[in-house]
Amino acid sequence: MSQPAPAIRAFFDEPTNTVSYLVWDTATKRGAVIDPVLDWDNRSGTADTAFADRMLAAAAENGVAIDWVLETHAHADHLTAAPYIKARTRAPIGIGEHIREVQAIFRPVFHADDVKPGGGDFDRLFQDAEHFAIGTLDVEVIHTPGHTPACIAYKIGDDVFVGDTLFMHDYGTARADFPGGNARTLFRSMKRLLALPPHTRLWMCHDYKAPGRDQFAWQSTVAEQRAHNPHVKDGTTEDEFVAFRTKRDSTLSAPLLLLPAIQVNIRAGRFPPAESNGVRYLMVPVTARNAAAVE
Ligand SMILES: [Fe+2]
Figure 1 (tube, helix red, strand yellow):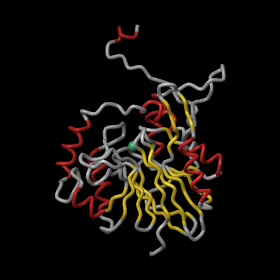
Figure 2 (cartoon, rainbow, N blue to C red):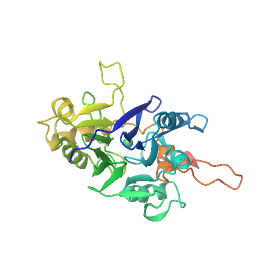
Figure 3 (tube, helix red, strand yellow):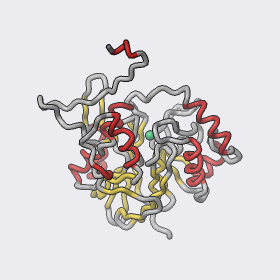
Figure 4 (tube, helix red, strand yellow):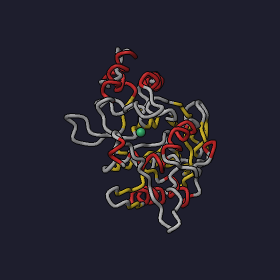
């Protein structure tokens, strides 16, 4: 099915190396926001919406009405601004249906009893191969587990928003060692995306600048990934990837915003309910390598 390409504006959040997107149908001016970042100063515990406001301003400048807030997965490196966008646009928040598994893993970790059962914090849970519309644009959901069990990509014609399923073709791939992550599954998900036509444009959720590249970049193609991605280019076997990824992941430390991000993002961006003093707190579960350390 051929349809006009969507208009795409990328917004890069340098503090978290995240790319958020505003995507719209030029025919109807209906649009979606993908993976919006909430500004979060972890040192002071301060949240702000300047980044999301830039996205909303761009939508307004282009006369675009936002119909969807789309997440590719529950991010571990930034907090989502989805509820803020939803409050201002009434757009429902969508994510992959396997978010239920991610919530089941982390709900007890954060004693997050307010997380609703069955993924009810989100407005729409997408299944693999499901289709929905942004204006007259057809969007296909592709389940791409591996980085997390709930990862999905959004395919709009020849443009695919891949989340963390791939990084730039000169950089590599995302870690697969979060709870519920799996390197072998990630390889298969990547191969599924790389089986799309070579000219398919792939839009990343992160960039860290590859060695020798001095600009951030977030758009690649299937052909470029298959020719150049050092972790997954053609000729790389599944076992080679799994061995490499497992070894690399064993050297990585937890992402800076892992704890705040996960407990907010599994709530679809809600912060935990306020305590009796009216203040909202984020939680740091304490791990004691030596029990005496916390006695
Ligand atoms: Fe991620």
